[in-house]
Length: 276
Image 1 (cartoon, one colour):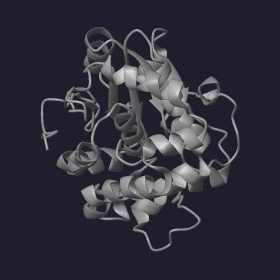
Image 2 (cartoon, rainbow, N blue to C red; image 1 turned 90 degrees about the vertical axis):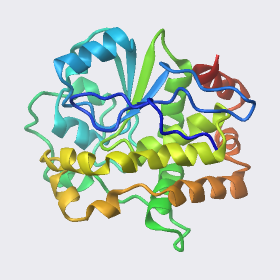
Image 3 (cartoon, one colour; image 1 turned 180 degrees about the horizontal axis):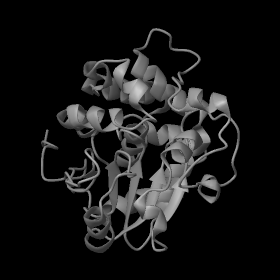
Image 4 (cartoon, one colour; image 1 turned 60 degrees about the vertical axis):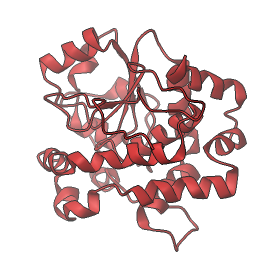
């Protein structure tokens, strides 16, 4: 197995878990192309230098945000939201309280009218209705696929459509929700199972800094302090188990996508985003 521990990390002032999906080996002997798709934790605290680097050097043109509406509104506008050349798209993979047709249209720098119970929907523990014997993280990931397949597909369609530049997919920590969308993207691009697992587990290298960053935000502080760092750390066996279940039940991530209407043409477009 070729190691994913390379210079794919993008070291920024305002994030701790940003890396490029380029440079990964594929089953046909190729590699994924750098500068197409990035994965990241929350982008709210990017510095001016970060924004310049992302937009000018990396040519970032699209943000795929997997957070809940409550997270987006409570965190407020990030610096990339002020740039007309960067398109933002929102696809929550968790349950929502209330409904907004366009979360970014109602996003404000200071939120004053959120319903009181929205605090309960910041990081809900969504799990699959079955599979009670699976580890909690695996059940959570299966829950995204069971309860929010529309938004999993929406995020992948946004990545497949692409732009003349790079896209970044992110959630709060850039490990769970982002990890599932990235796993599907890499599988479609032909990255082998073990490399997808290794990329997922790479977040463990920065978990202390990541937890500390989220704990400094009122939005996430309680969730960070009620569990220890080990419980937040992504484990290779979690993604390995998810991929094995997808293999057994659907013939792999591609089979799940086909069964949910994301067919050969769209899969080819997503593959091209990372390969051609």
